[in-house]
Length: 78
View 1 (cartoon, one colour):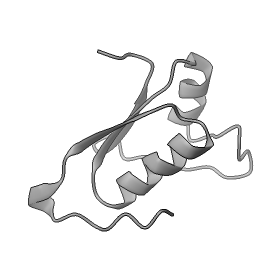
View 2 (cartoon, rainbow, N blue to C red; view 1 turned 90 degrees about the horizontal axis):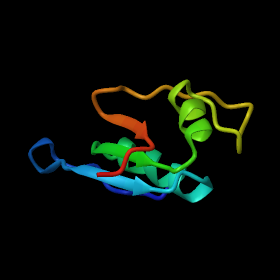
View 3 (cartoon, rainbow, N blue to C red; view 1 turned 60 degrees about the horizontal axis):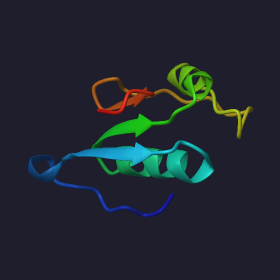
View 4 (tube, one colour; view 1 turned 120 degrees about the vertical axis):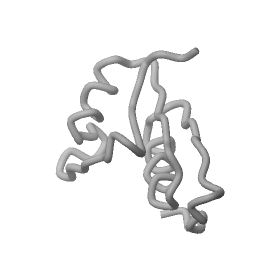
């Protein structure tokens, strides 16, 4: 973890992480762990599909779950 400090409930914001490779996914999880609402964006639809079901091709032996109220993955950028 990057050690992003916990954020009080009234100061939480939505954070976007662009690019969900090794570094981007680490940032995604770090911001999520600090209490932010996080949107992860990547141009690769297959990558997004894998992440949505809790799989990371860079770390195939570890599965994860994301609370859809706090984090989501997308290929749409607007």
